[in-house]
Amino acid sequence: MGSTLRTAAQICDHGFAPPQDRAALEAVAARYAVALPPALAALIDCNDVDDPIARQFVPNAAELVSRPEELADPIGDDAHSPVEGIVHRYPDRVLLKLTHVCAVYCRFCFRREMVGPDKPNALSPDALGAALDYIRTHQDIWEVILTGGDPLVLSARRLREVMQALAAIDHVKVIRIHTRVPIADPKRITPELVRALRIKGKATYVALHVNHARELSPPARTAIARMADAGMPLLAQTVLLKGVNDNAETLGVLMRALVECRIKPYYLHHGDLAPGTAHLRTDIVTGQNLMKELRGRYSGLCQPTYVLDIPSGHGKSPIGPNYFEPAGGGASGTISVEDFNGKRHVYPPPA
Image (tube, rainbow, N blue to C red; front, side, top):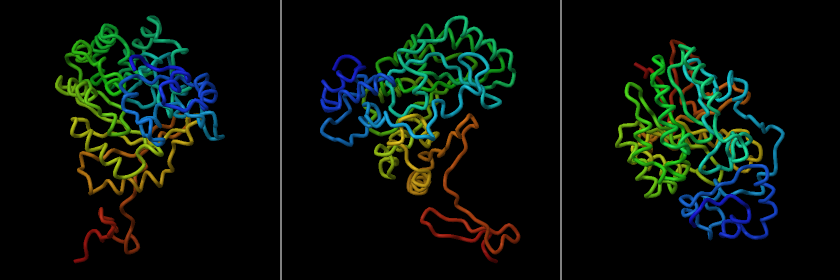
């Protein structure tokens, strides 16, 4: 397969969905963007109806079913957008959404109502200028997070211009880039693009979205190594997905693979209430139990923080398991704490 698949007909013709599903998938594609690039298509086992790569990226008729609690803007970006392209939810950092285009469209995307080829391709020069002016005039902004869409679909020249503009803002000290491109289209991670992301005087972090160890293909690992070798710290964001990574062994293998690639697991996101994604969401108790299974059995380097993005723009909160409770009536601050084997201990221990 030499080009990205973007229609239901192409998905079916290449064997990623049965022909009888074509009409339903055309209805999905009419509502939500579809893009399956060659690098990810090559990882799909068409003989496995439960293939975890296909489950993330191949459209499914279940996406046509929306539940009452699902929201077009599930994490409340719009409520915190003072100017086009900026989301200022937290005091010391902003999102700068440079484009609405991605190399691949995840079937669970929380911005699925806002991204795709039929949306504005990128911020206009005037809109980008206004967004940069907003950052310049808000001295409390310490970190700028480039997102979208996926900022790494832009040319090295365009990225360099944005990075240089941010480099000239003294109070911005950290630039973080959220991307799936090293996984979805690793050939885009060229030496020129990597050079464009490295700006003197600023710390550049790259946060990659990876949900299954098979996504870390040899070409993806080469692209990741190119960024790591350039001195950019790498983080990983993972979404907990039913049928993809909702068991401890799969999640543990992924976390170890990330660390071996010099990527620190950062967040394990509970699935957002995006329309048509209920078939991919787990419940929170499942996520908490998985985190308990990871703790102690895998290195501390392999432990992400399990988080929920509270709907309506209230931000992320950690929702991992609790390991302690008051003991002895709570007198003198005594607690009962659970170890990784599930055994409980009193702290401080009795004299």
